[in-house]
Length: 634
Ligand code: ZN
Ligand code: MG
Image 1: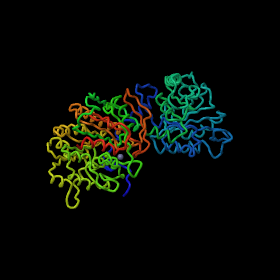
Image 2: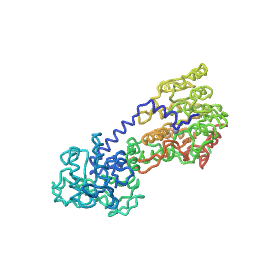
Image 3: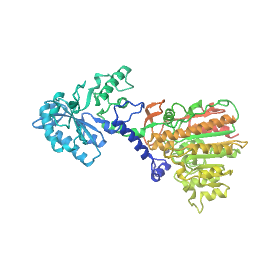
């Protein structure tokens, strides 16, 4: 069987749906660009707004591929040290390392001008650090630049290439002797005439003069105040600021960004480049805060009767996904109201890292199985699911997903097939399950002919009413009801899905909980996982918040009848998400993904209602089945 790194559903979506991601990206980039232009303003928002134009390749010539590595990565600023020798400008850190082959013109100016001419939208700042004898160096440089004047930035001509001279350089009173396109690294404090000021692009400072910070944790308060004061005064003069000799860590880059430093210097081009490039999709600022429900805890953790069992599975929902949603929702989450908490170890029978098939099967059928297996053990023997046990006990049963019904998680609760890719076969297992209600997308699998019939035909023969959109599903009171909604009705939240999951939960509880024997429901927040696979934090958080709204409704439902056990968990973590920054007050989160796949990290289990204390401890995902079965099977 061919290995598929992504969830089936995810692959289909990538192929068939126009990602709205583009729109979101565009608006975030607009934000970033605005921020770039107004860097001097101190915004109330805590989140860093940076583009690659702010990235500065420090001592760039020390890279294996000078200029190109940083330029191709999109850096807006590149630095070269030069020595004027024999009518040439040689690039090196010290004089004993000069090589007549490595000239400023050949290594930097020529390729930069050629690349900029090819891409008229691109801009570049070249910081030239003259190590000695600036009169000779500048005369040589001007001779080399003069033929390319039209591409050079001046105070009156917007050019693509800005040249700033640092190191050995003339006194401000002599700036006027140089062409407009020669900018200088300003001498602090700036005491310039307006004419001299036109020649100043930025001011550079050694960071170590202001702080001994090693780049771990945060800047000490006194250092922060000192550094911020300096940055603000440079900005007040209308100039850009750059520090050199900064620690080269993510925490430092973030601190400098939060302080609105204009050029972030680095020797780690790949890391800083990726860090800035990914900021738009790694940052989420929540604007839609949902109110949480306050549980009564009257039945929680007591030895009461259990009539209803509700299992809510957030696919790919690890603790970081949850905490990012908590931060985004400004410090409140229905999930965090649940007081009985455990840890589920999710590995599969044959692998350290589970997929949703083995993860779902362990919880539905009580045994760890191989990846890709749906409702069967590792010898392919069928495992009876919690939903089927519940149906046999006379309970009303529902399987709901905001993804495809033949996809692994819901399938593990009604089907028995050796491989998750056998979707038409999985669909055809549905009519044998005895489950009352199904809701999800992926209708095409149910319309495929297999042995001369389709899953829909089999379901209808068994007395199921099959509906094809959410409205019709909600209107039907049929005791055996299948909703195979159009795929766009389960589109991601960030693409405009409405309250599908909450409405589905309410419909199922209203219709099924009337039964004196109660109900069993498995409801899946399927797309937290897709956000993880896409490394899209906005998707992870919006799907998590959507799922949390259902959790609120479930808690309310449990309090209203007092005989409901709720378990909320995940099949695995997706994305290896970590959180690098955040602000609970403003709902800002900065995360970073370490993989586009599932990880082995155990996931939390939250329980509420009678006997919810049974779910404390650290246990196998298959134990969730065992603990729930006690309360389903009399
Ligand atoms: Zn997945
Ligand atoms: Mg799933």
